[in-house]
Length: 339
Image (tube, rainbow, N blue to C red; front, side, top):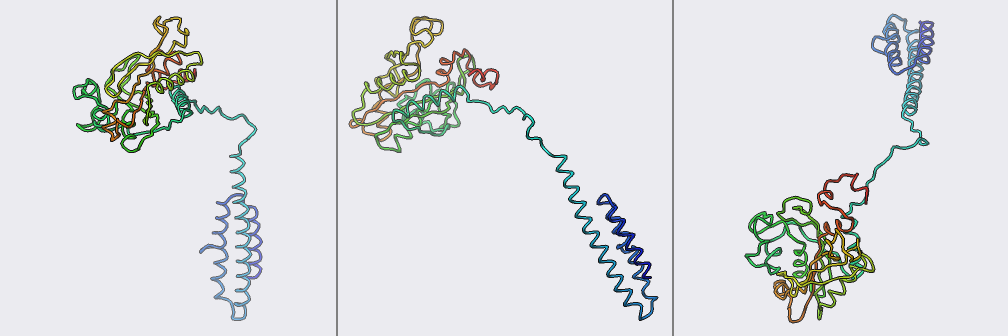
């Protein structure tokens, strides 16, 4: 039996060392150490040995088992490492090869215009304020001195959530919220999206972008409004830009004006862009109406202010000579890559 154990050990170790994969290694383990394996059969035959032989053979069986198990464990680690290295080799990346082209995109023209406008006004000491796109009828109309019969309050012109809530039609709601929650002096700009019930065409969209400004303090005058907007026009459109202020009517400002700038394509000579007039309208403005100040809890006898607002989509279309507002919302990279 000793010779049989030695012969079996040598055979088992040779087979283990010759195995090439985990499956064959496990088959060898079962063949020699399993319940029906060779070593198990020898162990069961020890009952036929004499009392003197049994301990000697038993010790030898344990030694053979230990040696086979150790050889199996070493071979198992070797095959696992080999398999891992093969996997790493197959997944190896050649970092010297050219990479795939990554398209990261670029700033949308509306974002570019927003950023430039904000930079100019922040340089003049304005802070950026924001508010919800769904706001109350009071903030959107009543506080802004819009009468009950004003056309903008009609359901054919405004998106109503219910009788008390609307999708804001201008970022003036941010002005109201600021005046109701802060004490003068106030100096803010309010950029954001607005919504009106417009049919989509080349110059109209039910969703558009706007930026408004508000200054409230003691002894704020119309000349400060003009100076601020003239400086903005020169910074945004060019040093040689001239402005023209025309009387207008807005319920939330008094007096009110519309502001034109010299056409930046023809420099005021007259062209198709400015329809031969030499000037292009860019925004509305005026001194804050006393009723608006009063509605926000600000004493109009002590404080005055001015406000202005412009459509960022319109400014963008003028600046980049875009003739259809729908192009700004289609996200066609062939169009956007031009800017």
